[in-house]
Length: 435
Image 1 (cartoon, one colour):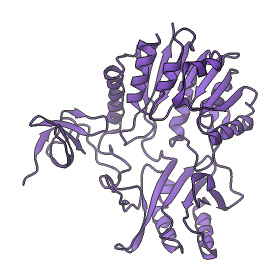
Image 2: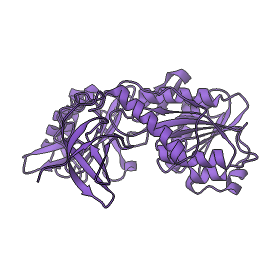
Image 3: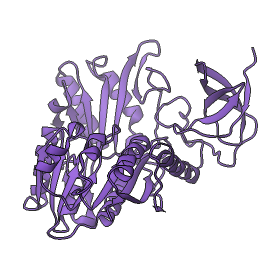
Image 4: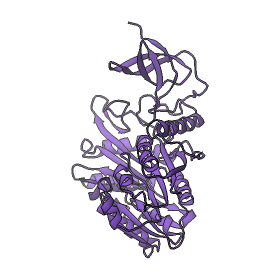
């Protein structure tokens, strides 16, 4: 049976080309608007299908040759076939569409997109490792598209070049260990002064294994950690005198220490620009009382405090709260900051009121958004300004609907942050003001 052909009309929020064939919507991976493609469906439902483009009959003006030889097999990227500027523009349209369609709101102004280098940006990554007996080797890399298999990778252009160059050597290292089939994961963390590799070891290593790790660390100038169980069990083994892992925000004279298994933004360069824009929009002033909700390690809390404002950071993890206290002290900002653990997904008006009045608020939730928090904000006595940093346009739009259409805020501006080039992932920032 011959595979069907379709004309691509637009791009979906996941980066798939959209076509309509015989009354069904077809989402086609690898296809771009204005192209005619032949496709093969891998998922069929009554009203839609998911498919893969098998051939392109006329290239879109947005199409470029993917840089990575593993693109199309590896699931780490989904948009390398699309010109970088077009990726940014498509993400901006996705944000605007979500705000309009889901949130029933329109910003007074669209912010210029925040974007930076297209390659070598990923300073945090979790690589899988697996002994593949049929191939007689160990694979280290990201999963293949729509698969539990690991892509056979020898390079990765979204990783920093010095890490990409190590991929073949990582494979040989794991293959040489006594527990080569009991080491399923390698977590990468690149800091300002050190690169850390955390090996998830499900059995103890022996002396010969330690010697292999030591030789690898010396050759590639990295620090090796082991993680026998959960993330909290990770510990360094060599070299023990390596610099501490941290990222810098020089605009605010801040150094943020972090552990390799803790959550931080993967793109340190874009994070600096994002924080700078957020602080400029928030405009914190000495003496103001400001809340940083979902504060993590204090990525926004400490830069806010540099202005002289008093900041309360709230986070759902006690470990992150403790680390935020440490970061504030490390940067001499413990007198202007306080942190507390709270389940912000279960916020209510009474609980929020007990915290006292905030002049301004920054919200940076995970993908689930902050619906309980924004619902709990008082329409009469809420903060006059809210800056909302989002990693999901749909939950931002849902929460914006509450803030604008229920709580009486104005959506002054919104724009995207291209934190993850060559993926369909959309980060964004929005400014809400109470007139």
